[in-house]
Image (cartoon, rainbow, N blue to C red):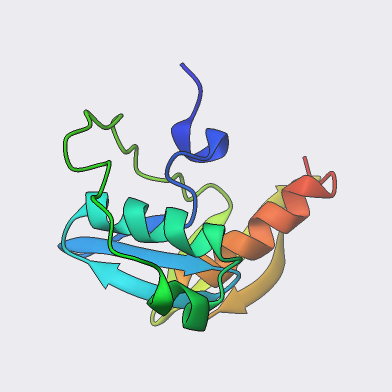
Length: 123
């Protein structure tokens, strides 16, 4: 089975404590108690190209995720991301030596950096 976050079903949505966070390109768009609400708002923000002023004017419609059986949310892998006190570090062992690729305030920032490195042939 394919990884659903790579496929895009849970794109921009991460687990945060007892709820869910909606983030894109380092911008925070909301925190939700229910993943159904995060999915719904994510879709609507995508419809208006992440313009919050247009999002606020969208008409009220039923949330289609309310009655949908959702695929399981697998926790994201933190491969190449190391937790430090109050920070996150992107690192990779190359030729037997640990190489560091930045330290970030949030996991999301570190994850974005790691993903950019992977897209550019880091593997």
